[in-house]
Length: 402
Image 1 (cartoon, rainbow, N blue to C red):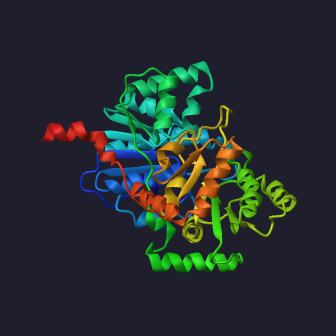
Image 2 (cartoon, rainbow, N blue to C red; image 1 turned 90 degrees about the vertical axis):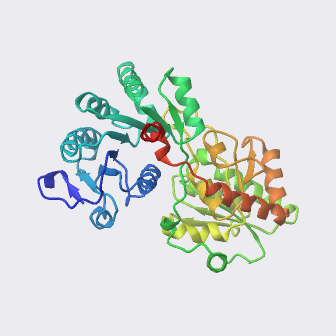
């Protein structure tokens, strides 16, 4: 790994002909959805990419074992409010320095944040660029009329816009009228991050271990949710259904992985409904440990509500895809980018989260039909292993060479 202060030092080349500079303020080993998305993109073409990202804990050891060069700019720990401005400045300055080293032809800007740096680079350097949009990052360009105009200009100058879901693409088209080509490239699951071999015997062992830790019978039906404990994630609606499922004879348990401001409220609700022994709060689980919990459940459920606030867009539901990768059927809300991850009656059931009847019927149906759960789980594995390669962005380049 190299920081900006080390640019003058001699660097070992790790790629033969790198011609794509990938820039993202979020990158592994820091755990973040965008960082994971960008890292998976880089793994597809390690011989072509150079990465420029913000520093994070553990980055030196991580960067040294990558098959592509990684450059980092520093982060201020005690002056965090300045970091957005520093992201913009450092990414601009370091991208120019790296151009004179590699003479790359393309920039892939990993998100909508700090886009003015990308706009300036497109005027300073003889490059073409793609910009990625994930959902909430798109809102940074809508804060005021001047910012919106600059953001639209950036999008117009792009070679292409990459959206993480069809919902993000639709939101983009509804907000801006652009001729710039847009591409939907969904996130993919990287099995290595779970630090487990996903063979059936190993997953069965993990399933049994988690159930023993939480005193859950092996024969019980277990629902799992993973996410920050905030109101619009609607964990409370799953808890509401537990007494109803018990009344129709289902031995049901619910595991929640995550922390957040609603934890005390959810625990109080469990006690009020007298299901506190069936609701298990596992806390914040590191990614490498999540495989145990996916393996332990029979159904994965997240009944996210539509958030009308302007600071939140549900761009894509990565946890649904991960649950499918582990062969688990999903119950999810029919909204936002979720519909890219959950295909109704294929790998799960999509519901109106505001319809108590519809939600209960989905739970009741899956809890009582093991064959259906297995069928949806098998199809989910197939869907989770499909992927669109980012090199498809350059298909015209390959056609010219051909």
